[in-house]
Image (tube, rainbow, N blue to C red; front, side):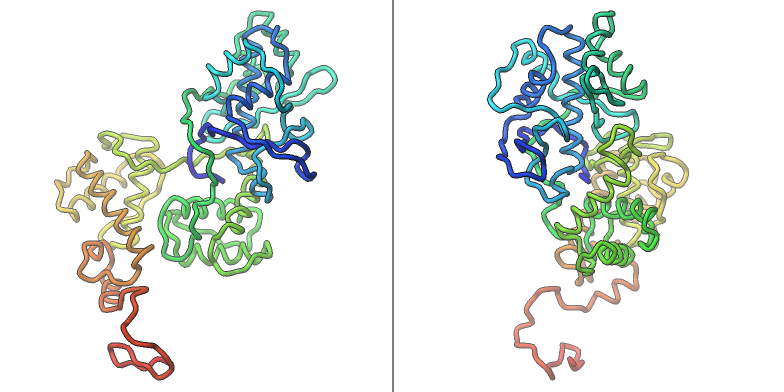
Length: 409
């Protein structure tokens, strides 16, 4: 259940056999993998448009496996297998055809997705002669190419008119979807946002899991309770902390329920929250940047009663306008309701400030600028507390008292 937009991994690890049987794993560059599979699946004498259509299907299927943590979420240490019973044909050290290599070099950072969805299409295919399927027919693609269809027309013939090609996708090192740090009460950020979205969708199939609202990226008590119930249902330690075991179990269930690894899926619609200044936003603006703006305003509203919560719908309407003006007034900026670079950067700074303090300090807010982003009751509650994790200077034991003279029991 990755939280970033799909990327092209520099390398991919292939298991040279069925997933549940021992076999060697080999790690190759992603373009090398695509060239190998294409040279193993189709013929270099085919029409260029047929070859290109098959290359895009091969790329998209492999990226879907990476994006959905298809095998890591099941406990395997590879991204894909070499067998067509599960994935795509990969033959170690095979010869690569020159024209296929050239097409892959020109195409490897492109993939297919359905319009409005995030995940690369699980572009299944078959040879179309000895086996047939609901996806692309390899020999059928050659026949269509000979009739004059281009690669996009061929792909739409098999996958539908609601697909599009993403080009120039970013290339980066293959990473785990798990954020690297257990997510727990008080944390703020995109991993928490993904946990909340995933739990809410899984709760539709498992109603015992309480719904989380608002979905705001703040690991609050409602999120902790939902995590604990999820852990109880799926025989995990119900500690309310999302470590690797809970994270990958969430990913496995979410992908399975939404069928993200299937050709016909429910579709993944939420995207990475990108915090770089996107340009001026004002009433009437829409899109991902507005969703990010609403998300940050919503986080601050959780700690400042002067700010209103608002839906994260990507539409800069009257509610967002009021929320922006309220924030600008609080921050000492001209309350014009227009989000320019100054407003965006100040908002982002306050958002990050809350996240850092909740994760690293979590107790002492009094006298700090972040305290002003909290309600009065919270400031009074935390203002005179000792710093979390700071050694008090003396050994604590039964009968000790704190600085207020209250006895520890």
